[in-house]
Amino acid sequence: MTTELDFDGQRVAVLGLSVTGFSVVDTLVEQGAQVLALARAASAEHIDLVGVLGAQWQQTDADDDMVSALDEFAPAVIVVSPGFAPHHPAVQWATAHAVPLLTDIDIAWWLQRRRGLATKWLAVTGTNGKTTTVEMTTAMLVAGGLRAAYAGNIGVPVLDLVREPVPYDVIVLELSSFQLHYLHSISPWAAVCLNVASDHIDWHGSLQAYAQAKARVYEHVQCACVYPTADERIRTMVEDADVVEGARAIGVTRGVPSVSELGIVEGTLVDRAFLADRRNSALELTTTEALAQHGLALPHLLDDVLAAAALARSLHVAPQSIAAALDEFHTDAHRITPVGEVDGVVYIDDSKATNPHAAHVSLQGFESIVWIAGGLLKGNDLGPLIAAEAHRLRGMVVIGAERATLLEEFAALAPQVPVVEVTADQPAQIMRSAVEQAQMLAKPGDVVLLAPGTASWDQFRSYAQRGDLFASAVEVIAADRRE
Image (cartoon, rainbow, N blue to C red; front, side):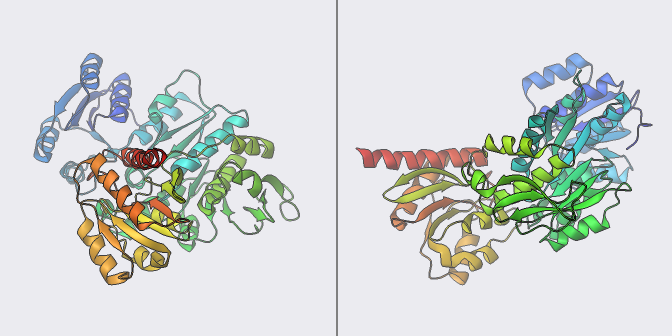
């Protein structure tokens, strides 16, 4: 997408009217476009404001309604929310009519260049760890004296940041595979793909298509393509990327780093990439001991720390600023978070483990586990994980709408593991029953681990509600013991 594009007088349809969709409508009207917003639902406030702005709003209760609205409006451009999969009729309509599909991120990049801003973008994707890495990176940048904020899949809409009166030095973007699938042409200063494992297969159609979407994060990178050295798939993504001349491949490893890598030497995290004498020396960033004091020394979090540090170092953030940011950093709730201990059993909330890869990370952190899992599989298969980690399991509690699949897989792959099915249908009851069943299976020294490996939407509003109800159920058990 180039600065030559001009929305003035263009008919633009916006699919979806959430917070991000509204930011798109607001921006496009400001740029002179004739805008029609289409969605199944929207807040009353957004609907009212669309009218105040002079744009149009139309509720589309069915996919056919949206297609009919597009036929009538005949847009020259469509801005699509990442929630619309490639097989959605509105997306197929755009393809059939050769109408460009853009994202809010495309428009933000175009608008930034149109305004002549020098803000650098850092792009972060991966199956797991995106949010933590984005937040860490932003904290490091701010500690280094830069005006920085995060956006994309988290935070405020990126268009809101680009339109602020005082420009940012850096914007850190969390990019999902959905966003990357539709993304046209941004040119980030640096980018990282943290990991790639099976996820969102129902949306993309295959693991290959999912990985291809992730690979787009490296396109047109200006300075640094950061990648985990142990992942050959991601290394190939970097090798195949069409980058700006002079961009470098920067590896991150939990081992001793080679030249142009960040890694760990005898418990010290070091940079051998962003210094002049990198062949003969390294810069010390922090230690695993210091990270452990803040709960950041688990293997998957070390990966996130190294990736965030690499992105920050690409912008010359000093090592002491990186260390200072990490000293103040705390991970999000619902990510391998202890919520209680009852009768010698520790209860861990990792409700944010919404795919098999994330659940695998959790399971590998403990030796004897009662595992609570299940929900919407999203086309993923938990079978390989069950087979690989059955030796850690004291027992299994299965929740979710797709329980039958997991029960069959346990019977076939881990028949020695006691399995209990939760059949309650109300969110609080489901989690209360799950925790009670797990308590009966667990013995002192065990961990009861909520790491569902699935999406939550079948039985809960979100992974956050799922985790909150888990913590509440644990507190009830703990209170009973105190009485």
